[in-house]
Image 1 (tube, helix red, strand yellow):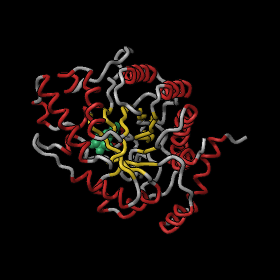
Image 2 (tube, protein in one colour):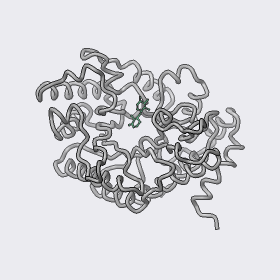
Image 3 (cartoon, helix red, strand yellow):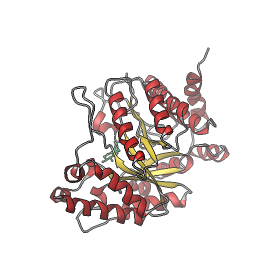
Length: 358
Ligand code: XIL
């Protein structure tokens, strides 16, 4: 008998033939009922200006978007004095013009810091910089950005099988682990209605690393909730690896524990990294869709997420080859639409879960 997973993945072929042309795509989207759970994708402002098909696939399918760039310190703060909101403002305008909401990615991330921040030194100086950045950025988008990824990737990498602590960054160096509490409190003060989450990756695989990262993340968020810190949810980035099975029970248990703390769950950056999968696209696409199905099934079994968002929407534009380029010269295929904007089995899986009413 066909499993539900096989049936959902298999429906992509039928959808693909129906939705081949841009006109058909628009008609199908208009006819489709509004999903129960918003689907979102990260977007690049330059592409919004240059690629009409890119805009079309976003407006036909997304209820939310996340700036891929624009809100990183490196983009917003080229110098200490500047707040350059232009890129993220353009993305916000696109969202509002098309009835979508915008997520804020991100207030704190070690990964995209401008050079000048290396000069930050001393507890008072660091606190002043952190507080003023969050106050100004969250106030600028008050009432517009509904959900902030306040801290992105706070958990350190696992080394030698040891439980990880918090990831080193400039704020850890000068303020210690209380930087997270400070960031959440300041963001909450600047926009009390905004939903504030912590966003993390590598917590879902059936490997030696994920259980340790889950434990560290759970300990972190539990401590914050117990101290009454304004934290409202946890983001599972969901950068799945095609060759790694999902730890269904471990992920389910984690999601149950998060839900029991009264926190929401968000799937924030789903894609399937395919550098270690076999070459033929049909095989790869099927395996990738199955991984995403297992991941979403485990989350949904515990609690319906607030959003399912992918990190990009089309294989034409994706961060994956920067870090996980294939060695066989074939292009990566991590996203729900292919390089010609045709829906893939991964889209069928996302669409199925977005519409599922339980
Ligand atoms: C990537 C972006 O896609 C790039 O454009 C950027 O230059 C670097 O980072 N997890 C995250 C994202 O939270 O911020 C990363 O995005 C991908 C991994």
